[in-house]
Length: 339
Image 1: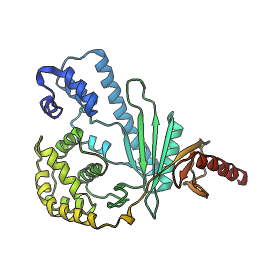
Image 2: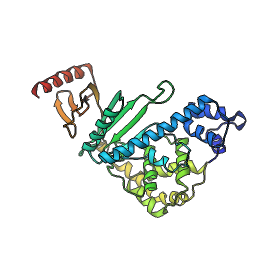
Image 3: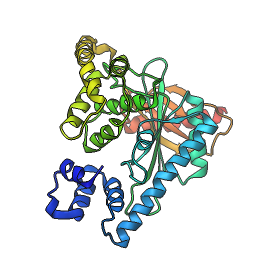
Image 4: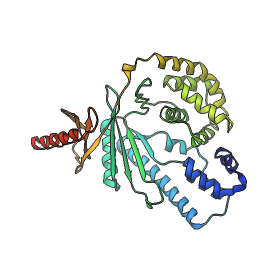
């Protein structure tokens, strides 16, 4: 990969030089670490502030990798999407990675990992979302400050009991993702298309994956089985306008029937099947409940209390109104009194 490609992808005039390339990557495309590492690889002159930012970015990347290794060994959670895609980048080249995404084999493993993170890091925010039908799935996001919180993005670790959450409507939750590593990466990347438009950084990911051997028919069948043929086709179409697809060109051709069939299937899904995500409203952080192996839901008139090993939340039935918050606080005190 060369800076010429980034000039094209970011639509920056080459005459403007590396400073404008970096400015654009930072302001619009969230690619500064990729740009900085590529400029360093090509021995472009940079000052101490840029070198310091790149050093911190490398520390951040390695910290995420160490976290993932440790949590996988101790709890069974494993990385998905970002960190695994980063493994296909050339040595020294940093994939844009603002967070670490992990999938847990079950709720007990998820909370074990959360407890470890809270114990080992200055976690300031813990967000919880409950979604799906039966079984219910849980997603937890933790944030804590970077070494320079005024300049660098905070650390963000997301854990979920489902590998692929779908769109909470026509595309269902798919708890397990099982395929060869590079095929899993393609599927997880395509899943992003259910939530947002594909971006420049996704094209760079495709470029890295395109260097690998994909069996067109088998890969297209797996993508279709995970209900993502339309998103994978759109991603590869976008990438094809900028980079060679390599073995993924055959995958794109093989996706056509599955893409059309999936779009027809989605149109036929009744609206009543749509799922709903409930975002927890923090009531209090707690002393870690080491003897809990999961969360507990306590129903009350305005929804449910979600009691977890690290914090307690309101899961409102119809919005987190002031009345619901007040009733949740009373229900929480009542639960405490019964313990």
